[in-house]
Image 1 (cartoon, rainbow, N blue to C red):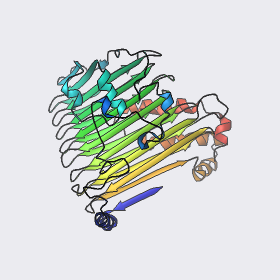
Image 2 (spheres, helix red, strand yellow):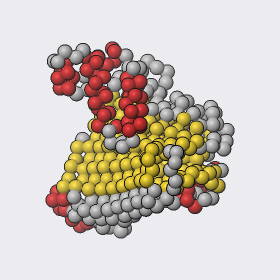
Image 3 (cartoon, one colour):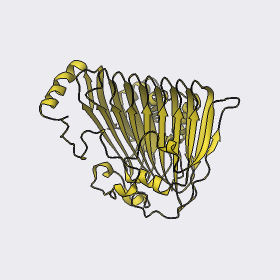
Image 4 (cartoon, rainbow, N blue to C red):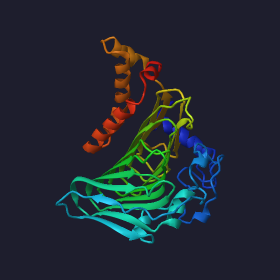
Length: 420
């Protein structure tokens, strides 16, 4: 499914939408919000009802596998393990602080959009704030590692990344260990700053990780956000991007590889409320399952919302999600959404696919003497290379390429040979 719109294509549709009241102040969508961007937010867990399977925002999520993180019945609450910080030597202007739960900086980019995010603040004991001072240019990667507290335990975390004006830095966030973990991330990217963030979600196979992210970009800020998921039993990540002034530029890239019994879900909203901003979203995933396994079916879900508000002239936005199913016993859902309230844009579009191998690519490689199993592995690597190359942190690129290779080593030759 592909849909690409240019300004001349959009203007008539936007005018028609206004005629019928699609963006009228009194009009709401099916979630009760006036637009996708007008979702309810709160730090108070009691302001949210307990999620149900028929709720739109939870319809893909296996609620019974969340170990009570969604309804407050979670077991064994513990304080989170201390965050491990690795900062490049000889660099000034970087501050990593462990702060109490009531530190306002943990809320700098906005409030949670669901009950799990609000539960973080109801249960939070301490959080972490990474501050990058104005005009600081960091040579090397800042790495923060978050470790689960152990099987049958539950912990909560909060992180704020506050980048000052014209700051430049690479930030790598690692999630490891066992247990149930829910966290909330706030990113405040200052005027003219350029921040690259890479998230490597690789908890143990029995872990449940539910995350909320709020990204706020100021004037002319640039953010490159890369997300990867390989580990965990259930992983659900929500990312909301808000442009607070003209000229900002945000790219979100994602890589995920789900094995037998794993469930990965990504939900994104890019809210264009300012003029002259750009966004580009690309997520790619692969799935392999085992229909004879006692584990649940391998599943992934990706929901990408892009909103262009009436005042957001000269917006340029595009989102794409592609999924490669490598075996039986696996299912992927991909749902792109685009709301446009102005015809004065540079471009807007989306694409989503769920499929198997490209027969033409396979034929091309085999016609040049490459054995079929090797050709299929090359195709999978090529499938991921496009999105991995968008994450501008070389060490992370190398690591993700290696992880894809390791995942492919677990796919049988019979499975690869059967996928056409």
